[in-house]
Length: 580
Ligand SMILES: NC(=O)C1=CN([C@@H]2O[C@H](COP(=O)(O)OP(=O)(O)OC[C@H]3O[C@@H](n4cnc5c(N)ncnc54)[C@H](O)[C@@H]3O)[C@@H](O)[C@H]2O)C=CC1
Ligand SMILES: O=C(O)CCC(=O)C(=O)O
Image (cartoon, rainbow, N blue to C red; front, side, top):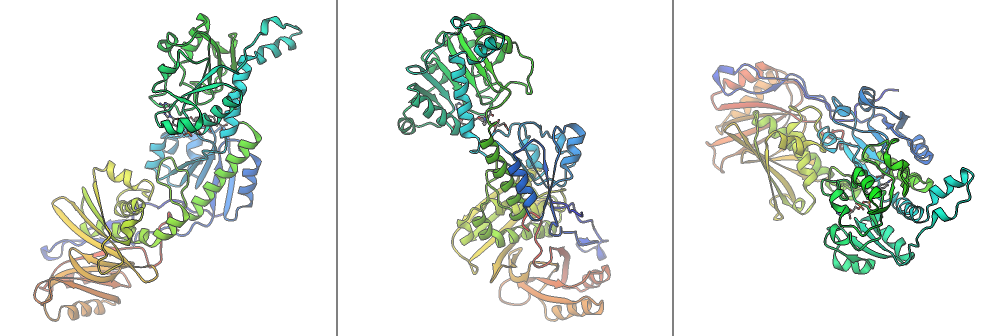
C-alpha cells in the first residue's frame, strides 16, 4: 500500500539569478517547492502491549493501518519510528533524541497512561511531533493499587502467603496494624493523590497533604490537613504515599536526611515514579527500624529485577503494576487511539504535554487564519530574502480576541519552511527561538478596513520589510499590505512583485513584456505612496506560469522599475499537511 509522508517535506531548491545590470538581485525559485498532498493512509505503530479494544479501534478506523512492534530499541526503534505517522506506547519503550534522529515522518506520540518521562519531549517538539497522554484513564486503578500496597504492608499479606506456600501455619510472625486511626501523608494532591486520600478517609485514617498547588479551601473541601512542607508532616505520619511526577524537586524526597525526621516505624509507599525515594536510604531505614515498611511499584531503574529491598522483611514490591487492570488498560488504550487518530485526521490536539491544545471548535474557527498566517510567513521570508532576527506580529480586529498562539506558530512555520527541514506548527516557535529570532506579538481588537488582519514586520541584516494579510468572504486569503503599500492581491500561487516609480505607462510596459514571453497574468494589484502619481509604488502580479529570466532582465531595463521578486506560495486551496 502506498503511504505518504506525514510531515511537511523539506525545502524547495532556489537560486539567485544573476543581477540584471547591477540592479537589486531578484530571487527566483527554480522549481515551485513541493507542497504535500493529502495523506492517503495514516500508519500507526503500537510500541507496547495495549488493550485489545484499542487494537480493535485501529483495525476498524478508515484510512488507518497499524503494526504492533514491541520491545524495540536502538537503531531498530529509530528506523521504525520513521516509517509511521503516529505511535502509541506505555512505559516499555524509551523515546530518546537518538530514536528520533533523522525522523521526517512521525507526527504524534501518544502515551497510553500518565507519565511521559520515557519520551524526550524537547526532541519530539524539535521534530514537530505532538506528545499526548491519557491523564485520567488509570487514576482509580493506581489509587487502588496504592491502597492494596498499604494494606498488604500493614497485614503482611505477601510474606504470610509465602510462608503458607512453604508449608508453615505461622500466625505469630505476622501480627499487623489497623489503618483506622492512623495518619497518612499524601505528597501530590492531583488526580491519584485525591483518590487515595478519599479511600484513606473511608478507612477512618487522618490525612495530611502537601502539594504546592493545594489551597486552604481545597484542603478543607477534601477534608485533609494541608502542610507547608514535606518535612513538616514526617514526624506526624504513620504512612507516606507520593503521587507526583519525578522532578528535580521530588527526586530523593525521602533520603538519608529525612530518616532522622520521621516518626519511627513509618511505612512508605511509592506507586508514582522510581527515584522519588532514594532506594539506598530505604534499605538503611528498614535496617535501622526508622522505617516500618516499604512498598514500591516503581524503581529508579526499570525493569528492576535485582534490589536488596526484594529480600528484606517489611517490604512489598510489584513490577510497575499500578495501572495494570483490565479497566485502566482499556480506557487508556481507547482514549489514546482516539487522540492519535483525531490528531492525524483533523489536527485536534488534546492532552498534549508539549504544545497548546487545539480543540475542534477553535481549530475550525481559526482555520482560515491559520492559512493566511502560514502564507504570510512564506511570503515575508521570500520578500525579505535574508537572515531574519526579529519578528513583530500584530493581530488586528476579531482575530485579536482569539487564541493566537497557534497562528503565530503557523506564521513561524511558513517563515522557516524553506530554510529549515521538517518544520511545522508544532516545532516552529522552538526552531525560531533556537535560531535567535526574537518574537513580539501585539493584539488590537480595533478593526481596520478588514474584520480581522495579521500584519508582520520582520528585520535582519539591516533590512526590514512588512506584509499584511486578511481573509475575504468565505476563506479567501488576500495580501493587503506590502512594505506599507495598501493593495489587495491574491495570496496564492506565483506572485511577481515589482517595486517601481508610479509613472504613466508602467503597467502597460510590464504587461507587454509578460505577454511577449507567453506568461499569463491572472490578476494585478498596485499600491502606491499617497494619492498622487509620481511617487513610489509596488505592483503584485499573479502569474500563471514560470517567469523566465528573460522577463526579469527585460523588466529591469525599464527605467521606472527598481526591483523585482518572484514569490512562490501554495496554490489556492492548498494546505500544509498539518492543516489538511
Ligand atoms: N505506577 C503506575 O502504574 C502509575 C503511576 N502514575 C504516576 O503517578 C503520578 C501522579 O499521577 P496523577 O495524579 O495522574 O498526576 P497529576 O498531575 O494529576 O498530579 C500530580 C500532582 O503532583 C503535584 N506536585 C508536583 N510537584 C510536586 C512537588 N514537588 N511536591 C508536591 N506535589 C507536587 C502537582 O501539583 C499535582 O497536583 C505521575 O508521576 C504518574 O506518572 C500514574 C499512573 C500509573
Ligand atoms: O503503562 C503502564 O502500565 C504504566 C502506567 C504509568 O506509569 C503511568 O501512566 O504513568
